[in-house]
Image 1 (cartoon, rainbow, N blue to C red):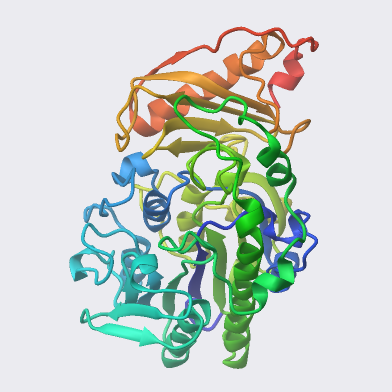
Image 2: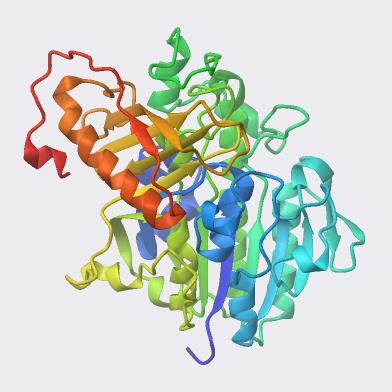
Length: 468
């Protein structure tokens, strides 16, 4: 590269991993993302560390877990003492910019005070974009807190602004964070509004197996106390959701086209990822905030610089690993505050040293309307829940076992194995993993109450299977 690589984050809101053909989606709605996944680096097993908007965004801005940032629920602002990605790139001489949804200020929906913008130099955003705009009424605010109405469907309007930013700064290294509301629902409508005509293209088409199965269940098995499963909203919302993702993919393709036309494609690292996924009210009364794949598993693809030709990465990667990955890819120092680690050492099958192996699990914190913690390996998922803590608290002193899934036999998490005598060895080992994470990340040692023992009729899990 003739200069420092440019870096762009293409960040969506509430996007499931299985929107991609690479994960089995047959609708062909992400041709650009799938194409780049083949030629760039596809993080096949990518997970949020907090399945709710504000906390997840704090993790991606800082490389820290939500309990470390202090943003463990919506409505809390970033701690100015924590170094952000923007500040890291500012210090390296980059021009930094933010466009779209912020959701990390303590004020209202619209303008964000300069001291709460995370250090970004250029600003065209709203704190709660869903509260200031609609699908065809995109209103954001500039660096002087002036209202700016951008023309077009909201995804296109923000993408146009991003392309203008790139075009005007192509001679200097830049770091641009593009933050979309889509495919999150539009709150005041409780609808997923796609561009005109796109809902009709996907009405009655493919439904992911977990969503197809769960709406017929009289009760979501193992649901935490107090929750009222509604049967799900997938049939009402899924066509619009797919249409929104289709337009996002088109916008992603337009951004790459712009970079190519300006001769910047090879010298620009582009990360596509999301804050969390969506289960369409099949697991609890809302759309996320659960331990299930439909809440925590997200699409993640990188290209440009060292990520071109990186292949498909099979290791489990957390949202907190992406900030150090971007800094490492740009050749910048990774702050000591970051809990995540760069994936660069494990690209191309190189692996990590025996003294510093890549973790074989990921840790998830759940808070706000429900309080829980989870740990996932490639085969097993174990989660606990507390119903004795007021919503909005940071954590709990006492949890109860809530879920255990064998993802090899039950990838759609339709059979909760928690409490089964046959799977007690797995639960015990996973509980130890979870407690280790809680101690290391949160500095706490909560009590975990075992689930009531149940007989399953299954054979006892072997020691070798416990370790998977």
